[in-house]
Image (tube, rainbow, N blue to C red):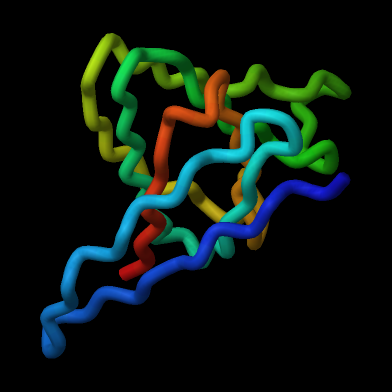
Length: 109
């Protein structure tokens, strides 16, 4: 099955927002979020785990696909990651959590 889409909340300097409700990551099919180059992912874990961000298959250096980026969450922890250049990650960022107990909120500036 295709990766499960995550709603991306747009941020700007004129309008304050109420923080969106986190959604559980799909640890089977992975997730995807629209990326305009300013995507921010807020990853929260209650028991630890990892989130792996993959490069699209079309990105290659000397015929080699770049290694995925793995973020490790230890115990109850929140990490915020972002700045996924469209030239490298494409217009969608795909990521997979090791457990469905990891939640995500996606923002775009």
